[in-house]
Length: 250
Length: 250
DNA sequence: CGACACTTTGAAGACGATCAACGCCGGTGG
DNA sequence: CCACCGGCGTTGATCGTCTTCAAAGTGTCG
Image (tube, rainbow over the protein chains, first blue to last red):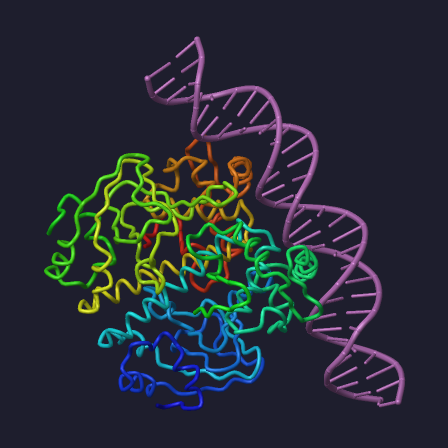
């Protein structure tokens, strides 16, 4: 396969499950690696959309400045995520609606936009794309809901559980992978609020000292979050945490 | 074509643009009409997902009850919209996450879920589905943003503009198509807040008397909303209103 | 007419944002 | 080596917005 250095990431991407190896490699061979230094932009709000990306290493902050000067973080994309699925396929897909900035040394695999619109002749792959978009849409729907139904402390608890699960971290003790300011922005709250909210989590069995997170009683958290989760068979942000076992998502 | 009674709706759906007539009719022939009386459920939260729907007439409220008893309205689907796109294609697609209730006498076209997963052999149609999902995703993303960046009165203004545009209403004078309680729920606010917010809209050139809405100065509204819109080339909720011309979306 | 859902209004409360100040680093430059 | 700076994080006091609770007005439909 091409891009052997990133075979771990690429092999585990659901985007390619069921796609014959030869076909997958043919698809991958149309991309090329691109490295970004910390702080470098992959693209800017308003740029014409030209590419589809797979994040191979590092992470990117999707961000936009509002006219009043506030900065909004719409997402944080780390290894294994894709960028541009929906933007490219939209009916009105000319320009990026966010900027993408490397939070650390980051490597992405870049494909021309056309690569994505030409997938009709790859039936399995195109169903995978559909599934990936649908999953993402579900995430965004849940997040929209949470922003009106949950308090800051509930959203934060969800986010921490999610982080822990997605990054395969030990729920008994792990380090925050991003700065507090960034997480606050991602959750749509002010750093001050974030800071104060951390304190209130202790009542619910989550202890945060400096940048170290400890889930003291996973069952308690489970209950705490699921109280506000009425989605059949899953917690908000799709996290089901049983005991101390982390469940792989995405 | 089959379902001639609804040819207006079906012909104007972007889902079928570019699809050869014969192919479209073949696709449509796999569906059947279903009528719902006011208040009747199309499906319930937790039901297994079996079908994809196109709304031909009337409207449906997508809703879910939270464990604490609050009722959440995630969407209102009127004629021309589809239901189930993402749920069916998701990787974990067993059960409905919302209930769908008819708000009035409503007619839908029902297709078996398999119909949607078998679209690979209809290249144009499957790209249309991708585009439809992507467009929807963009909507939801924007809405998630708006819930943290905009005030109730801004979100309401956006919603009214959106309603006016989507339903081809006269911005100089139109009737609210839904009850105020329902709209409040759709916007994630309490009826009391909604009622109070209506008053504040007058300062921004939107007059609401009883159920009659009047945009007194479309330019003013445009500016009011776009102040909070930093998305290149479009307003929140994708509405661009020039003068008194309504622009068709979706 | 009376039941009931919808809508409005008022007063009090909760939550998060804002403004301001301070401690804590890590880096830069004299 | 130390002084200074800027970004980050925390804490306190205050403010604005939306929710909550309560009550009353409006409408429709039997």
